[in-house]
Length: 440
Image (cartoon, rainbow, N blue to C red; front, top):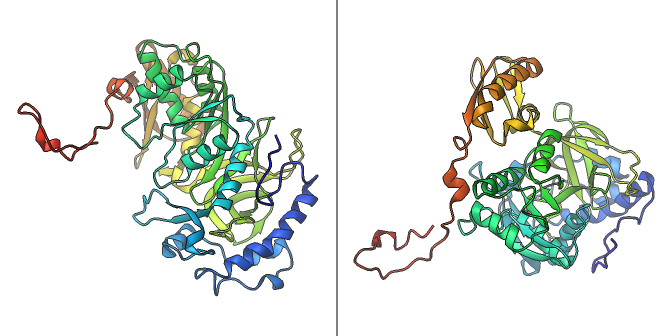
């Protein structure tokens, strides 16, 4: 679907073939470097755009890491006047120091347009539940803006709030005839469990729901299939991005994940050698092409990816990407490295009749410990089969314990309906006035 854009942004179909895509990138990279040179962070790190001899010369420039963004907090990468900023965001700050990210209205048009390219095909007939964070992060805002830009109705549910519990999500999905939900993959499993706890069938009692649009976690084919089965076979569609960039890749009508390489230059970077290439396996490094407020030059997302440039029946002529996970999603036990994605693939390959939705694992010095929820009559069998599978596929000593449903994800989590209450200062004699300002 071609939409009118206020900015001079590329539209799918404007180029035919990867050579034309590369020329499009070449035409924009000097603009990005010129803007970047005007920021405190990039001064002294970059050379003038006139000395660049093409996209391949980007590989000679230093890599920008998340630690650099922390050091440049809050406005070290600002390339426009403060008056032009539309929004300011920060990462979750799990390291103790935030990374800042900021956007102009023009930047938001770019982000929303990229997100809306997905094969989910948002339109005026859709009601879209946004169940990702709004507070400080960009993820909820990009989905909200993209849905509104395509005329859809938005239900701003958020997932960092007590206002909207899991039980309330289920009610909204059903009562509002939600057609598309945007969330973490785990949320889709939690909603399904909450619906079942309330006596509903996720695959039957939500006939309007046509797609689950997910991001933010690894999504193996086995997990995707499990989510789809739980919800009656509807499409589970993946997006990939970050707080600093917004959407970086989305699925085409053929179900393949494509990088939005007309809006940024993607490179595969090997941190061990410092070499970069257009395709292959390594860290994803990107250089923005249309970012006004905060141009990023060779930004290393620290995600391991596999990039290919190959023809696809969709005709988009954009590289395909397989997201292999982050280094933080790998843990060692003994001499073996265990990745979350390989564990996930094994868990969700268990037979559907076992009812497995939730699991957890931890690496100990001499073995891997795993717990998996299953229906009571199959819990022991599920544990035994998973233990054998992990030993065979990972070559690691492991101990798997079957847990009854409700032990990993409690019934209170699935059924809780109480939410946010407002602060107040006047109480009756039988009320707890110690909660005057405890209004979570």
